[in-house]
Image: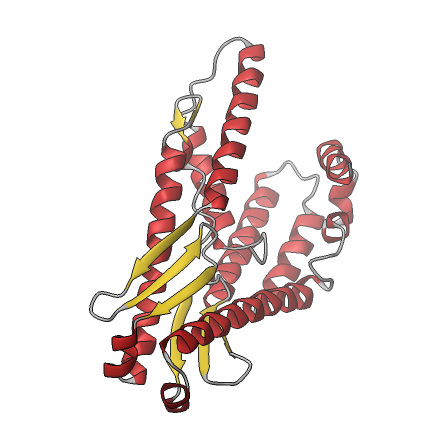
Length: 134
Length: 143
């Protein structure tokens, strides 16, 4: 991540404010803090595990594959030998963009799936913790 | 309104109404915050481009980091094999992402008057810094 200030952070804040209306808070304050600590630990583990993974995506009609991190950084582009030989340069460039978008979509889905599996006071983390990129 | 103007307006409004309890102050602060938010979203849509070191491939990304375009030159098609071209595309995209981070940092510096490495308390209006909640938050950040 290059900056902590971005549309994702703003969307996350708005989503949290909406989700906060549905929180089912325990009456015992001690349970609130315990649950928050558990949630924090669960989130830390999830983010650490996701950060170790990479996600692939491919262009539909050209043999181009991209690999990205969960933060959307491109770590590798793979262009097939035949794709290089039989595709013109403009189409190949478009295929690279398409493959990166597909890989980022897969990373985004993995993030949402992971966050949806954890809740805080009855509200899914997926409702208020957006993927780290748009 | 530019992002710099939106931030200036937000800063002045927030300072002016820092301790205000009346609805006008809250409304004006909320309006200024909304305008600033819109400027941030607009800023994130701006694009920057960069090439690999040899200039074979040019990548364009938004300041939010999204890849929007990759231009592979005819020279790249002639000079590089598939593996070389793959590596060159990766380099160009990485360069563009680094450039987007730099551009975002420059814009924040223009807007706030200081860079992203500036201590957060210097970015908070003075009127807020002494409020108990803000002082406690800043103390926590300094730990």
